[in-house]
Each structure stands twice: as C-alpha cells, then as structure tokens.
Image (cartoon, rainbow, N blue to C red):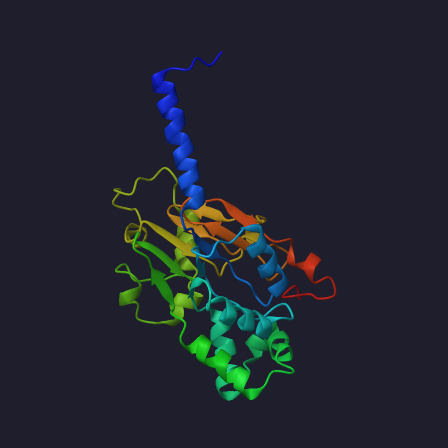
Length: 267
C-alpha cells in the first residue's frame, strides 16, 4: 500500500508540475517529408493538437509525389502567417524551384514526382507561381537552434559542420551522415577516438530524405544523436511530426489510404 509521507507528497508535486509545465510550454515540432500529401499534413497537424505558440520545423521535400504539391505550398504560406515556422529546403524542392524559375524539367525529376507537381499547378496563376518560387528561394538549407540542435534535410560531410561544407548540394542530397549513424557501434562512447566528429558538433541532428520504410520501419528512427523523421510519406508510410523535447510523435494515416486512386512515388 502507498503510504503518503511528506517526501512522497513532494515527489508527486514535482511530477505533477513537470507534466503541467510540459503541457503548457511551447513545443518544437519537427515535420518529416510531405511530398505533396496535403491531406496527411492536415491530419497529422490536427492530431498534434497544435497550439499557437508551438514552433514547427519542416525538414523539406514539400513537393513531388502525391497530387497536391502546389496546394501544400499554398497551405504553408498561410500557416507561416500565424505560426512560428522554419522551412528547410530539400532536394525535391530544388527541382521544383528550377521548374518554377525557368521551366527546367530534368528527366530524373519527372520520373520522381515532378509530373505530379506540374499537374498540381493547373489552375494556378503566374502570380501564385511566382509567390511559390520566392518562398522556395528563401528557404535555408539548415537551421541550428539555441539548444545546439541541427535540422537539415539530408546531411553534410565536413567535419567542421555545414558552415564549412564545400558543396551546398550535400545539404539536400547527402546520405553518408545517416549511413554512418546506422553503421556506428551503439556501445561506442562519444569520447572514443573513432567516434564520428560530425556527431560531436551538435547535441542532436534531425534529418529527412532517407525514408525509414527502406528499413521496413514506419516510425522515426534514432541512431547515435541523429533522428530520422522521414517515415515514407512519399511511398506507403505515414507523415510524422516529432516533439524534439519529449520525443513523442504523431502520425497521419498511411498516404495510400488518403490517396487511394494515386500511386505517389510507388512506381
């Protein structure tokens, strides 16, 4: 039987206040790759019970896949008017930006969701397209917050961090950061001479780009201090939002269930 004492009462009070504090405090929520799935984005935002003072950090790849790429950008432009948001640029966003700027259509882009993005712009005016182009052009390739946490779409290769990266394309394309995290011995201490220097630079690193469904996993993956939040929304997985402090996460339904008449990038 639980016996109430002054010490136990104090512990319960601390736990209670901690829970209340966490509920009331603003959250930093990181959003995985969307790939034109506006239905999933609306659904998962509703499931997070989003508060006005929460901050959303999007990891990129807003377009290419499902049929609502242009509509996703419309929604995000409206969202940032009322919500604190950071929008990281992904590799698919770079492709979409090129098309909006000069009509450039790389074959690899068309084969990986570009056609669906072009079709989503049917009915959009030139002014709306220019607004989207300006939005994409202003997106940063990475974000570092006050807790020394790095948010980036894919990765970086410099042992001195993204600010010393030679090729900007690595920010949206690199997979070596995640592959290194996967291959690392989980028992290796950070002080070990062989521990990757890139991982020591930040308290935590949040990425998208490489879908966790590649490993038959549909939830966020954590290796070393790297969190992968791309849970395969472009394919058969859900869209995920992760609270970076509590590590609680929310997910939409799998995208094929929300778009039953489409294939997304399942080709």
